[in-house]
Length: 226
Image (cartoon, rainbow, N blue to C red; front, top):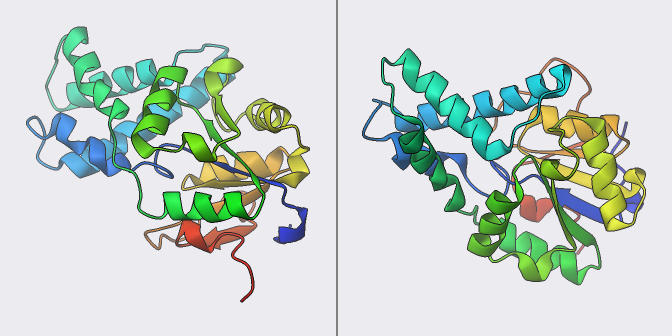
């Protein structure tokens, strides 16, 4: 599929790694591991993998609990076994993450251009509420859609279709923006246009469909011709 900006009536964003920076969770494990940033990235990836596995076997847990489980698993590989209370306390860093600098100016411009705006996330309502408050996003958003509403995680097609319903548009009218390649492909599978936000210059994934659009900064999305 080819990128078609004229189709877009609504823009949806992923949350973790797209609006807020996963690297900012590294302090939660800085006293336990030698490379906390690399560990934080593995932590998030494993939690997302657990969500995908849950879709396949019909098991659901909130994204917060998936991160608690993922933290337990990864620390066990390091020979570290905190109790469940400590694991949950460390995971609470997901309630206070750093916001990427390009988010607010991009949403401000998109709002001025008249697009509907939403968040579509694996995050449970408490995680998303904290993120929206921390990032001061509420004035920009028409919907904050959680996987918890349908008890299926990305890249389940039903979640993107549910998000389009929440925004009152067809999936083909939505551009979904994410740092996550599987998330972009999931949105495309549901009929949305998929936008890969690649701030770090990573090579594309050879598996599956190529994103409709690739950006290095969110502010470049749907920028008007000057």
